[in-house]
Amino acid sequence: MTKILVVDDSQAHLYALRKILEDAKFDVITAEDGSEGVEKAASEHPDLILMDVVMPGLNGFQATRKIARNPATAGIPVIFVTTKDQETDKIWGMRQGAAAYITKPVDKGALLSSINKALETQA
Image (cartoon, rainbow, N blue to C red; front, side, top):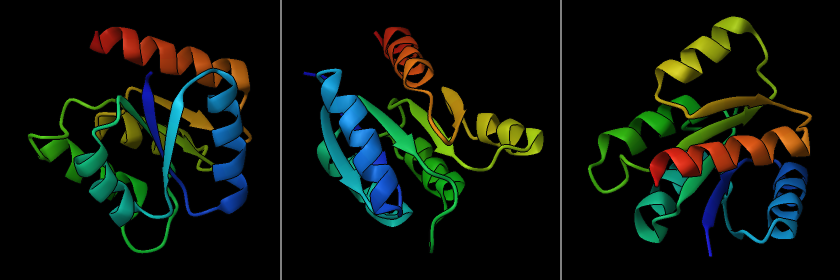
């Protein structure tokens, strides 16, 4: 089963994303901030990460850079799922190595399509 790590400081967003992913038959693990996300990426070795940007402490961009620089986690695709919807945010997110950039509120179809595309690219 494909394992997806969801990193978001909002319980409501964690719940909503978990529901979408579990309904699509993904195995879901969660982290509530960027630091925990970096730790779980290394310990759980998910197949893909959904990363919020705006979080206390280590933000999503910083966490993604740490994940990309660690040889043990560098190959894990990251999709940003965030409220930051400015074009400059999207460009910056993609420059961090993101596989995709999705804005909240999340469109279920677009999310699942982006996930499947990122997973296919990794295969």
